[in-house]
Image (cartoon, rainbow, N blue to C red; front, side, top):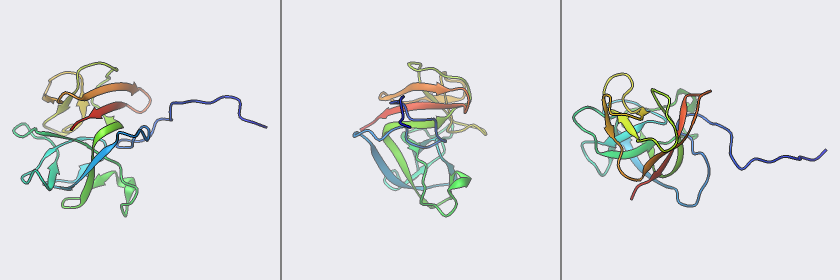
Amino acid sequence: MSQTSYSVTPGRAVAGMLADSGQDMFHLSRAAEGAAVPFGLAVVAGTNKETQVKIPTATEGFFMGVSLHEHTLDAPETGVIAIKETLSVCRKGRIWVKTNEVVAAGEAVFFVNSGADAGKFRNDNTSADAAPAGVAFAGYDAGTGLALLELNLP
């Protein structure tokens, strides 16, 4: 029996996983500072902007990108990068991210900067900072509560 239908859209994944393998992907390697960093969250520059990133806080918000899922960890199922461990930060590409509300393609992108939802994405500035130009929602999956985020940062 042969396959008779095809899809150009990959299935939904987990937070922090790339949505596709486009040619314009770009990732940085940085150490987690201050607290463990879950996959699929916004990260901001740490104390040393060249080597560290952390979960956003209300006082610090230089957006660096999104924490990328890692298969190479000892326990990738926990979904977090431990303090001082190296993580990949997606700056270009399409990635599944955590949200704390329903979002839609084309809406404004903000990242929560305080509380239990720090680092999650949303479409308004409630306890959140605006993501820089080059960050856009490309879709939302109600089943998982994950948004597809398109990043095109320098």
